[in-house]
Amino acid sequence: MNNKKVFVSGFFDLLNSGHVQFLKEAAEYGELYAGVGSDDSFEKMKGRKPICSEQERLYMVKSVRYVKDAFIMEYAPGQHAEAGKPPFHSYTALSDNTEPKDTILREAPILPKCRLPYRIDIAGTWIDQPYVSKYGAGWAITASIEPTHEFMERGGMSTSTRNAAKKIWPFELPAYNEEMLARLVFCFENDPENKGHVSGAQDAIGICISGLSRHYYDGHYWPERIETIHDEDIISWLERHVCLVPMFPRRPGCSVVEGKDITPQKVSDLTDAAARCWDAIMAKDISAFADAFRDSFNAQIAMFPAMMQPGVQEHIDKWKDKALAWKMLGAGGGGHLLLVVDEISEGTIPVKIRRRD
Image (tube, rainbow, N blue to C red; front, side):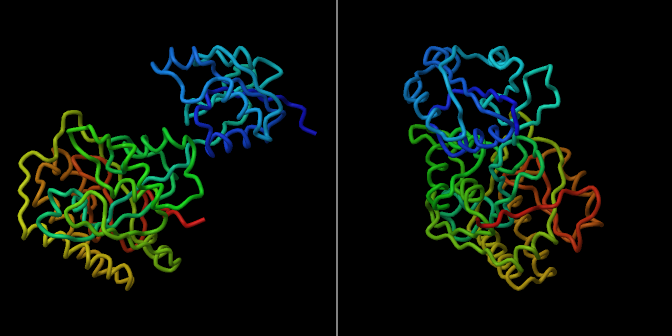
């Protein structure tokens, strides 16, 4: 019988499936006790009042069947370690980089990190912006991938949208209608009062909708329709022929839209390449896929030449003899290269496309 006691702490405001998963897995290590940060602590740390009062949050945490008991505590990062001194193992629910805080019990296991997916864009990038699709409608192609690697921030893998989603679901997506989740993340990230840049819908769709997807844009922020593939043969084939290579994060102050030159012909080149790319994937035709993939990237940089920031071409040149085609993920300017290859080689990061549960 496991006689260890485990202490966790957090605010647990708007208790959700990520919190419950955190508590469930913490309880596997022993009898679980939870400290719930007080309203005063919440306001001091976050600069606003919690949505749910401390008594509501305490009631909900106590109601989770994995929790032996819970109590209100004055909370600040690191303070929970004192409450969780031996014989407790202590953890915090504040961060996805969850580390054991009890210096005496260093052997205590580390609880799971955030399981939220990342997004890779395969073709048609930029068509999800209305100022592009107004010149011609077309598809963007994305895949939701498992967090098998800790990818860099500002790396073209929609980390900003993923970080927004993490504020709603700290550990993993809930089992719910995936398009509704994508809509929720898109609306959460893009404040209607914001007069600046609106993140394209492909970011939220690519994170929340499992498998391989294409979405059709025609002058609006949200696509007219979304088509998703979960066929195992197609997904496995794609995983064998694409991989990632890190470059460098997009530099602070970098504007990839400076000097943009969007014309109907250039948008037509982009949408045509994306359509051919999808057809090639469905046919599992590596040669046609590489051609369309390369054409899609060339169409992107024809419209947004500032994507090719200093240092990018040098990274591409390293892989020209090893890859069939290549593109920068996301808006470019740095980040990761996505390569089309005959087979995955050393020095690259394989892609694991997220299957439907």
